[in-house]
Image 1 (cartoon, one colour):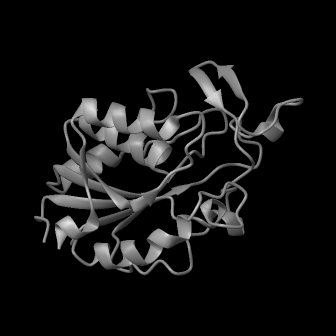
Image 2 (cartoon, one colour):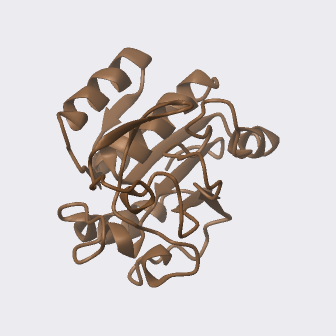
Amino acid sequence: MPQASAALIVTDLQNSFMPGGSLAVPAGDEIVPIINTLAKRFANVILTQDWHPADHRSFASSHPGKKPFDTVVLEYGNQILWPDHCVQGSEGARLHPGLEVAHAQLVLRKGYHKNVDSYSAFIEGDRTTRTGLASYLRERGIDTVYLCGLATDFCVAWSALDARKLGFAATVIEDACRAIDTQGSLAAAWESMERAGVGRIRSADLA
């Protein structure tokens, strides 16, 4: 069992990212039972949700003439444009109905600022605005995070990298994640995480 100073961060297990969703991650639903089992080993569990307004600036629909997966330059840098997804209060924004983590203590919503995307559970896309998660963890004496969910190469990776930047030990549970993998993003994410000292394990390693 992980120590009391560790937390599991379950990233964006939402309907928009599941097969049939507007931004489906291939085989995203396969990790739900893995995470249900995994979460039982942790006393501390945090869930995250993408929570976008309908006119969010990361949506291709907010940029006339652009299509999903195009890239534009915004004030804070390059932004991949996404299909509309995880709109506040929508069915797509709901957590997967098969997720059974009733003992989770915190649901952290991110991406609700209209003009800034937020892959990371710690710092938004402008790399300045904090979500408050780091302070929450420190207040509770948590210094180690394990990450799982969707997608490996975006929200999971950015959260893991920011966790390291903010002084937490961070490990990604590889078989409890799935990736979008656009334009080589998965390989690049693993490379960045390795350089930052993010651990890489499988769920069986925590048995």
